[in-house]
Image (cartoon, rainbow over all chains, first blue to last red; front, side, top):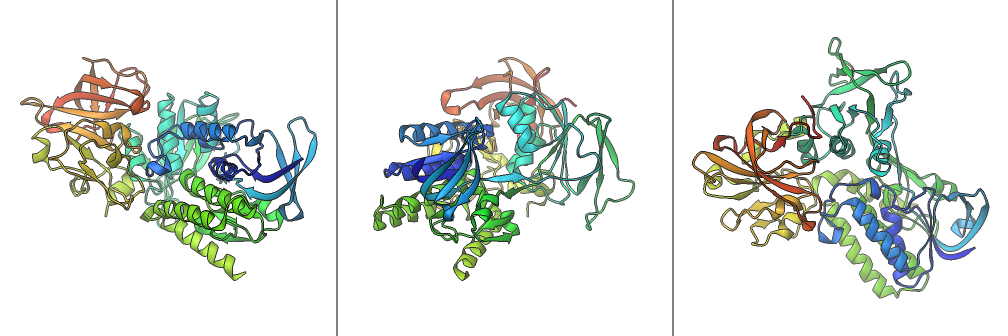
Length: 364
Length: 173
């Protein structure tokens, strides 16, 4: 099989990249291991932040529908339930395994890796009991499959994911007994925290989970207050009667495919861990392989879409579908839009991380 | 700065009154006005974009805090459903002599009915009084966020920010 641009991952970054490139006439093929395209977008039933050009005020799920519709109109080919098990020849070919277990080689001229991120686990006594699950898995069950994972939930982690999923659990009819965080301050935005506080969910900062207990499933958890050294303060333990523990303690980029392709990676804590180095055009240390979205630094869906667009424009230009001047102009627009999203104090960390990443790219 | 919000998720009274989107009690008592409880510089501006009278100003840097112009604001409430953070309320402290009319974003089912007596909750989810539902607005434009308006005793109008229906899908206490 042949294509001009292969994109791995059909989340916000991959879809945005596909649309930008296909618009110019590039033949685009997206590969995704999931049964449905859209990445995390279809779990995001809340309205997005940003400005109008970032699709602010629109729910993630509707942004997903919009992007898929555009892909269809532009004849973007999407292979679902298809795994990429290898990147050959500096990104010029991919090894695919289709849903029916057949394998195939996909030859491509350019490659964009938009593989996203994976939830961080948290180990504590009892963490393997059924009933302990990631916040992302909870959203998948609840918002995609319409299955409530439990009735009484403890949320561990108060980043935006923990806060938003707490709110969604209440919308779905569950009770969130508490949202805890080991840090003395709430990790996510104040508006998301206020939203769940006025619904009566307590937020306990400087708290950790000591253990989950139960024979075959979670019956309860012990939480405790921690001191400045993050160690449990004796005799502050409390037992909560719950049936579900949601873990929302951050995400790490899924850079394995980029690494196996030979792209140089660097560990940047602000971006969530090991990420492929890239330049402002989103091109990695291997010419013709681009990255976009959480794989090169965990941020928001809105930033992922902007990075996706930049990578799509860059790939289209290098394939000869866009003239240099036009590509430059389009990229400048996207870069400004990206800068606006990263200008606030909440994005300081990721902005610093991105600067480090790009600086390192140019040094190597 | 914002210590209460960052450690508890609830704005302290002082933190609240310092926000450029929160009008003074004096202005609230003059008639319906948007109360924008947006305290952090996050990149977002749908409130400014949706305002038909130009009463909400953010400006070119979308990280700026929204500023409310209480004179220009008509209290129409479009911003309530537009705010992705569900942080905008419309408060009319001049509804009647003793009652205020408060409008909030509401994303739970079932919706209350007009005339219902429901529990009025403060920013910490504590019941502070009862509220009477007087209006429920939902439209395609609001995209599944209903705007629920209710009356409460006037002195509670800067405290009450949510309601609890008996039997609704909400946290039981």
